[in-house]
Length: 164
Image (cartoon, rainbow, N blue to C red; front, top):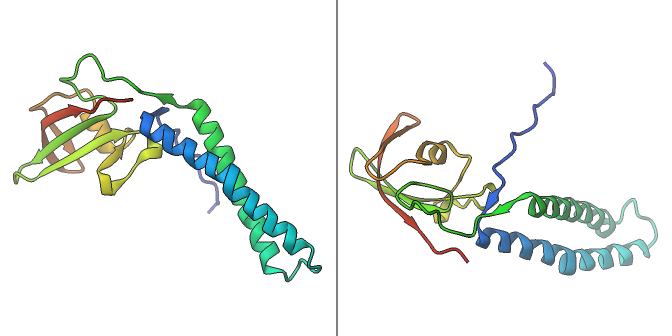
Protein backbone atom coordinates (compact mmCIF):
# COMPACT_ATOMS: atom_id res chain seq x y z
CA UNK A 1 0.00 0.00 0.00
CA UNK A 2 1.53 3.31 -1.01
CA UNK A 3 1.17 6.71 0.55
CA UNK A 4 0.50 8.38 -2.78
CA UNK A 5 -2.52 10.61 -2.83
CA UNK A 6 -3.59 12.18 -6.08
CA UNK A 7 -3.70 15.97 -6.00
CA UNK A 8 -6.99 17.55 -5.05
CA UNK A 9 -9.03 18.71 -8.03
CA UNK A 10 -8.78 22.41 -8.74
CA UNK A 11 -11.72 24.40 -7.46
CA UNK A 12 -13.66 26.76 -9.68
CA UNK A 13 -11.87 30.11 -9.97
CA UNK A 14 -14.90 32.20 -9.03
CA UNK A 15 -15.50 34.37 -5.98
CA UNK A 16 -18.02 36.99 -4.93
CA UNK A 17 -16.86 40.54 -4.19
CA UNK A 18 -17.57 39.96 -0.48
CA UNK A 19 -15.43 36.82 -0.51
CA UNK A 20 -12.57 38.63 -2.24
CA UNK A 21 -12.68 41.37 0.40
CA UNK A 22 -12.51 38.78 3.20
CA UNK A 23 -9.46 37.10 1.62
CA UNK A 24 -7.75 40.47 1.06
CA UNK A 25 -8.46 41.48 4.66
CA UNK A 26 -7.01 38.20 5.96
CA UNK A 27 -3.90 38.61 3.77
CA UNK A 28 -3.37 42.18 4.97
CA UNK A 29 -3.83 41.17 8.63
CA UNK A 30 -1.39 38.26 8.38
CA UNK A 31 1.25 40.31 6.55
CA UNK A 32 0.97 43.65 8.36
CA UNK A 33 -0.07 42.65 11.90
CA UNK A 34 0.46 39.02 12.87
CA UNK A 35 3.72 38.28 11.05
CA UNK A 36 5.60 41.30 12.52
CA UNK A 37 4.38 40.34 16.03
CA UNK A 38 5.54 36.73 15.68
CA UNK A 39 8.84 37.84 14.14
CA UNK A 40 9.49 40.10 17.13
CA UNK A 41 8.69 37.24 19.52
CA UNK A 42 11.08 34.90 17.69
CA UNK A 43 13.77 37.59 17.69
CA UNK A 44 13.46 38.06 21.46
CA UNK A 45 13.41 34.30 22.08
CA UNK A 46 16.54 33.83 19.95
CA UNK A 47 18.41 36.25 22.23
CA UNK A 48 17.87 33.93 25.20
CA UNK A 49 20.50 31.46 24.09
CA UNK A 50 19.80 27.72 23.71
CA UNK A 51 17.13 27.43 21.03
CA UNK A 52 16.62 23.68 21.27
CA UNK A 53 14.57 23.95 24.46
CA UNK A 54 13.16 27.42 23.90
CA UNK A 55 9.38 27.01 23.47
CA UNK A 56 8.80 30.58 22.30
CA UNK A 57 11.43 30.19 19.61
CA UNK A 58 10.23 26.77 18.42
CA UNK A 59 6.55 27.71 18.43
CA UNK A 60 7.31 31.11 16.85
CA UNK A 61 9.24 29.56 13.97
CA UNK A 62 6.43 27.06 13.41
CA UNK A 63 3.84 29.85 13.42
CA UNK A 64 5.94 31.89 10.96
CA UNK A 65 5.96 28.93 8.57
CA UNK A 66 2.17 28.64 8.87
CA UNK A 67 1.71 32.37 8.25
CA UNK A 68 4.05 32.34 5.25
CA UNK A 69 2.26 29.31 3.78
CA UNK A 70 -1.14 31.00 4.15
CA UNK A 71 0.18 34.29 2.72
CA UNK A 72 1.54 32.45 -0.33
CA UNK A 73 -1.77 30.63 -0.81
CA UNK A 74 -3.86 33.81 -0.47
CA UNK A 75 -1.60 35.78 -2.82
CA UNK A 76 -1.77 33.10 -5.50
CA UNK A 77 -5.49 32.54 -5.01
CA UNK A 78 -6.34 36.25 -5.29
CA UNK A 79 -4.26 36.48 -8.48
CA UNK A 80 -6.10 33.54 -10.07
CA UNK A 81 -9.74 34.07 -9.08
CA UNK A 82 -12.38 35.78 -11.16
CA UNK A 83 -14.54 38.16 -9.14
CA UNK A 84 -18.15 37.78 -10.28
CA UNK A 85 -19.51 41.24 -9.59
CA UNK A 86 -22.65 41.39 -11.70
CA UNK A 87 -26.00 39.67 -11.81
CA UNK A 88 -26.58 37.47 -14.89
CA UNK A 89 -28.86 38.76 -17.61
CA UNK A 90 -31.16 35.74 -17.29
CA UNK A 91 -32.23 35.73 -13.64
CA UNK A 92 -34.72 32.92 -14.18
CA UNK A 93 -31.86 30.39 -14.18
CA UNK A 94 -29.52 29.41 -11.36
CA UNK A 95 -26.02 30.83 -11.75
CA UNK A 96 -23.06 31.58 -9.48
CA UNK A 97 -24.01 33.89 -6.60
CA UNK A 98 -27.71 32.96 -6.56
CA UNK A 99 -29.78 32.23 -3.48
CA UNK A 100 -31.81 29.12 -4.30
CA UNK A 101 -34.74 27.79 -2.28
CA UNK A 102 -35.31 24.06 -2.54
CA UNK A 103 -38.26 22.04 -1.27
CA UNK A 104 -38.16 18.31 -0.59
CA UNK A 105 -41.02 15.83 -0.86
CA UNK A 106 -42.00 16.49 2.80
CA UNK A 107 -42.46 20.19 2.13
CA UNK A 108 -39.32 21.19 4.07
CA UNK A 109 -37.47 24.11 2.52
CA UNK A 110 -33.74 24.79 2.41
CA UNK A 111 -32.14 27.94 1.06
CA UNK A 112 -28.55 27.93 -0.28
CA UNK A 113 -26.25 30.49 -1.87
CA UNK A 114 -23.79 29.27 -4.49
CA UNK A 115 -20.37 30.77 -3.77
CA UNK A 116 -16.69 30.08 -4.46
CA UNK A 117 -14.70 27.38 -2.69
CA UNK A 118 -13.06 29.94 -0.39
CA UNK A 119 -16.38 31.27 0.88
CA UNK A 120 -18.11 28.10 2.09
CA UNK A 121 -20.02 28.63 5.33
CA UNK A 122 -22.58 26.03 6.42
CA UNK A 123 -23.97 28.32 9.14
CA UNK A 124 -24.93 30.86 6.49
CA UNK A 125 -26.02 28.16 3.99
CA UNK A 126 -23.26 29.08 1.53
CA UNK A 127 -22.26 26.10 -0.59
CA UNK A 128 -19.39 25.71 -3.02
CA UNK A 129 -20.02 25.94 -6.73
CA UNK A 130 -18.10 22.63 -6.90
CA UNK A 131 -20.41 20.78 -4.47
CA UNK A 132 -22.75 18.05 -5.75
CA UNK A 133 -25.81 20.14 -4.78
CA UNK A 134 -24.58 23.23 -6.63
CA UNK A 135 -23.59 21.23 -9.71
CA UNK A 136 -27.07 19.69 -9.77
CA UNK A 137 -28.92 23.02 -9.63
CA UNK A 138 -26.70 25.22 -11.83
CA UNK A 139 -28.56 26.18 -15.00
CA UNK A 140 -31.94 24.99 -13.69
CA UNK A 141 -35.13 27.05 -13.40
CA UNK A 142 -37.97 27.35 -10.90
CA UNK A 143 -40.09 24.15 -10.66
CA UNK A 144 -37.24 21.97 -12.02
CA UNK A 145 -36.71 18.72 -10.14
CA UNK A 146 -33.23 17.71 -9.06
CA UNK A 147 -31.86 14.61 -7.40
CA UNK A 148 -28.83 14.71 -5.09
CA UNK A 149 -27.62 11.81 -2.95
CA UNK A 150 -30.91 9.91 -3.26
CA UNK A 151 -32.91 12.98 -2.23
CA UNK A 152 -35.34 14.69 -4.57
CA UNK A 153 -35.78 18.46 -4.49
CA UNK A 154 -37.75 21.03 -6.44
CA UNK A 155 -36.52 24.58 -6.98
CA UNK A 156 -39.12 26.99 -5.60
CA UNK A 157 -37.27 30.32 -5.73
CA UNK A 158 -34.16 31.90 -7.26
CA UNK A 159 -32.94 35.23 -5.92
CA UNK A 160 -29.89 37.32 -6.76
CA UNK A 161 -28.52 39.92 -4.38
CA UNK A 162 -26.97 43.03 -5.93
CA UNK A 163 -23.21 42.58 -6.07
CA UNK A 164 -20.92 45.47 -5.30
